[in-house]
Image (cartoon, rainbow, N blue to C red; front, side, top):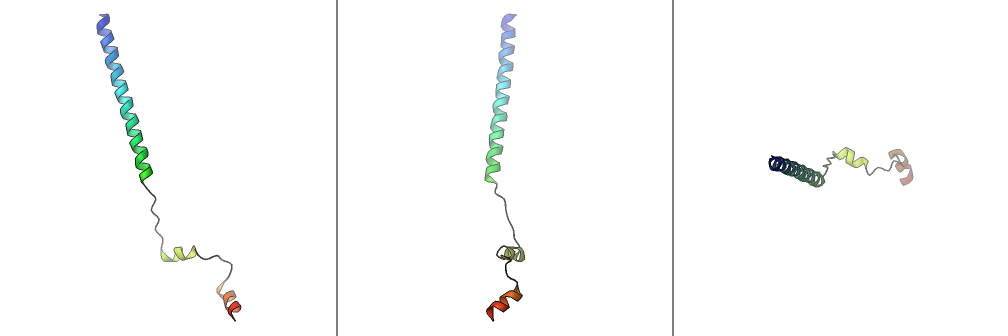
Length: 67
C-alpha cells in the first residue's frame, strides 16, 4: 500500500510542476508580446503644427517686427 501512495504523490507532483512550467512560459510569452507592441501615434496636420508653435509671438507681433 505504501508503494501505491508514493506513486500517487509523485504523479501529483509532476502534474503541479508541469502546470507551473506552463504558466511560467505563458507569462514570458505575454511579456515578450507586450514589448514588441509599440504605441501608434496619429496626428492630424493642425495638431502637428501646434508642436512647432513656441507661443512667444503672435501674428500681430511678427508684423511689427518685420516693419
